[in-house]
View 1 (cartoon, rainbow, N blue to C red):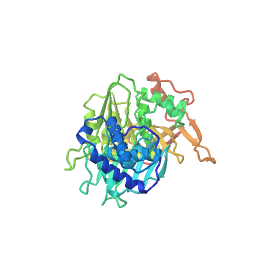
View 2 (cartoon, rainbow, N blue to C red):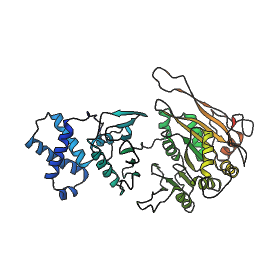
View 3 (cartoon, helix red, strand yellow):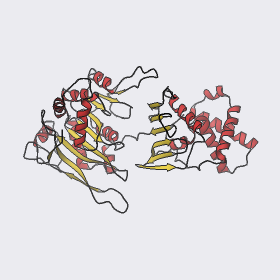
Length: 445
């Protein structure tokens, strides 16, 4: 089974006589092929062999079809026998970033940030379940009433989530998320996610070993930006990445990739993000990159950032820079170590240097809407200083989100730290006269 991009999807009509033909000829195909011979062939050769055999069957037994109808029938039957049925052309379409199957009759996809329903369906609930079982079997998992939820990464990199009845009242639900290729920061400038001055500033922060938290909502591009920022880390440094599902694609040579493991069907063998963060500290890392903090591991990550592992990066789910700090405080309190909120403030103030806020807009575009510096100290209330922000223009007739990036002076303390690291302050920003700056605002906490 291949989940690689090959062609653009051709949308097919809903239920018709074709569903019956596919079932009939799939059965005929399975009667004629030699399974032992098929198992010895490579995936590409296996498909070619099946298409040839099926072509002979159709020529011998009918029905009479046009060349386009014949090629479509052959493709659908082989997809059913070898691949993932109606999902196969969707997985072959590089423009699709997410596939959402809400029962056998409702298939949605995301393209360019927009969700649309396709005129496709599974022939039955049983066929959908067979497809799901084929997918999860590739990662040695199973889904049934005793184990109705599966979250896994496929060998080809896609993230798969399955939930079936009785938990899902709409029938078996399948979500396949394809991770985009790694973008560089200049490419993100071309997409309008940030501008040249912001790139220069973020580059200086990463090279000067500032601890950076990338914040944003679901699908806002946190992992994409984190991956791009990681490309700024010097190649000689030892980097350890820690993720729930390995998505980061670092290009440096000295990278150790760690991935958490869910419990098995007996509920044993789980390895959490927290276990991996703790273990990474014993692996002599120069930088630690955590794909997403979402629990007690936040405290370990904050302690690592403030005790000699400068220049680390992580992401967190939050809708604003202030919310990100509150979320870090809440997540840190989920550790079994009972730490008062005031002490957590101290940890966050000493660990976090930069907050990069991402937003996914109504037109599907993703932009860096704020770069802020945490300028509070000790146990005092969080104070952040905005140094860059996206100011949207009124929405036009085409409903595209446009705007400008504004740049504000850096606090002198931050500018001095960049100077010591031999990193210049980008000209669009400048330096404030005060220690913490006029752009400072308090975050509730």
